[in-house]
Length: 112
Image (cartoon, rainbow, N blue to C red; front, side, top):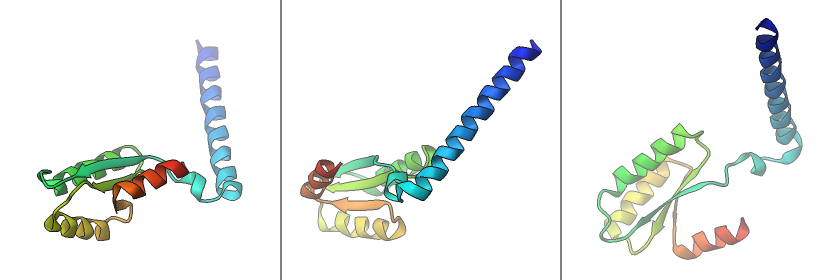
């Protein structure tokens, strides 16, 4: 039993060391872009969308829960002026929150 426990501990330690080494090498040689998450949480918002601020808050909560690197994209699908104003306020508070038109989202998807 002790041999099994020691083997498991050695396996976990080796896996951890490989992960740390891999992250260090990416940071040094891979550039900052590779360390950023390619994940975007997209929230389509139109005139009929109710409580946009709450929906954005929920997406930000999901982002923090799963590592914090994902962008939150508020997709303008016919937002009214009040929604645009609120989106700009939220964008100032959160650097990973983007307000995009459909063309910007499509261009970003083509780049990936």
